[in-house]
Image 1 (cartoon, rainbow, N blue to C red):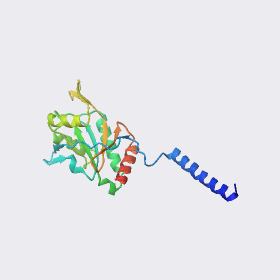
Image 2 (cartoon, one colour):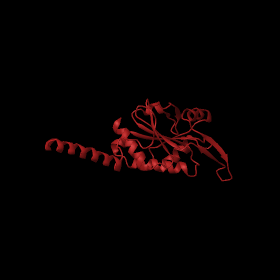
Image 3 (cartoon, helix red, strand yellow):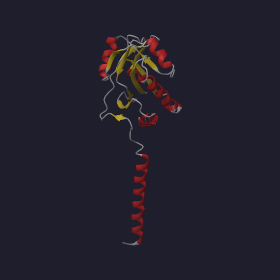
Image 4 (cartoon, helix red, strand yellow):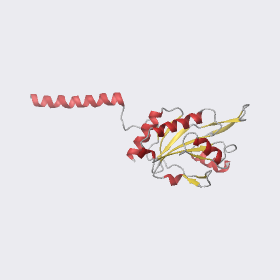
Length: 203
């Protein structure tokens, strides 16, 4: 083997080693950190609910935006306020260009207490751009079922009267209306921001 060939070989080897080290230290930048849905991505089930303003919200009309969808309730003692606070932190870290393409939607699992007005007032405490939605139990039951949301009222002795056990995952719906990734409770904000920016960039 001549010296030129050896030098080329060493150069290629160094590039491969460098790439491996970068991947090991920083991970693949194009890898989603949340729980990804398999391709072909499932379409997010459409639904419509009347907002506190009287306007009808239709999920399908959010095409062109990435929707962060979460199910919870205003009397929730910990999971829901924590998650909404994380959604606020997530949006606070986006650039203005990305921010206009993201919508947080909070749907109740407690229609007995959460009127459209109450739930919108609740989410406004976190970010005025968030959309809070409620409806009749019949309307909501279909939505819960379509998204695989578990919810169960649990009798209690607190002033609230009862709590509601429920699925606590944020679902990310891409700009084409497909379910792309979901985040379990207490997922680091860094991971949510990472996946959101990645999907916004790709889409």
